[in-house]
Length: 373
Ligand SMILES: Cc1ncc(COP(=O)(O)O)c(C=O)c1O
Image (cartoon, rainbow, N blue to C red; front, side):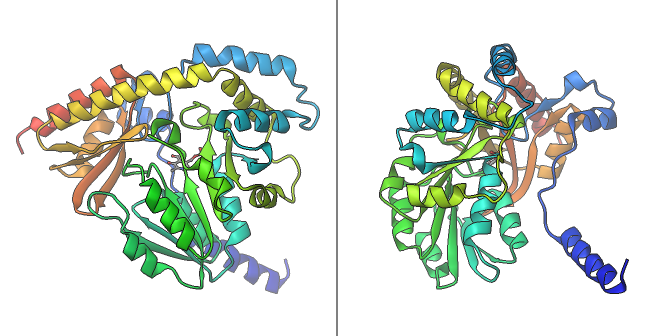
């Protein structure tokens, strides 16, 4: 290799290696091996996946897709058909939808298109960390204003962070990890005042009280991200989308590489929408179990669980979050450790699992919290 090339390549690679990235948790297999557990003993409650739609109900749909699609050829009408179903589901025009390989991928695309190096991306903290990593990857500046201690937005603090360099505002609602939904009036006020694109991440909208999707006809700078990973139970298929006014959606759809999303994911998204009762029933069951989980967590000495409009629950403990995490892990319970969030010193997050999974968590947590130091 040419000497200049070698040096350039080394610098490039070193910069990428140094960049802050999302670090995935160990796999179930690795955890089982490390703690001497059986794979079946692992209770995965760290990624807000949705196990409320039974696999037996999804497998027949996948078989139908296998029969209907010819994987030997590039996608044909699958994307259009999916857009039509999303349009019916959200009651929005077909041309206001853009599909992607997960909502993370669509978020990354929005950032790539609208945020130039040196621009500012504004959000609040804490929020979904992937946004920050994508902004930094783009060599743009990440500006985060702390939420208030009740997890509501500090509107005035946000306003003071807006300036001529601010081109993207990210509002996660319901917010991960705090699980609360932002107020509609506040999202509207910020969308009116922000001097750039406003990206509202509604990954958990199906579990919340309302959606801001209807606002896309009113605001030309609003993009709403949605996903099939949560309420639709297709996290492994990586399917997401954004909705915006047609002008903006058209720009987002204009990817240089053709056929970005595979036919299996596109078709499975459509099948789930055609069987929307599966999704609706699972959301209803999860919401009932969410109430139980929050109540039971709050009955444990030294645990404070917060209200949730998502499919996960944030809680704070009087014992060290590192210890709580580790003790749960030893029993095969994988939850997310977060640490200090605003004034809460020892925060952890758990997906609302199936009742038997939550019971294991409650039992283990209760035993540990009641142990004398
Ligand atoms: C707020 C938020 N947005 C997006 C995602 C990821 O969604 P997807 O699987 O569509 O990339 C998550 C996943 O946890 C999330 O919490």
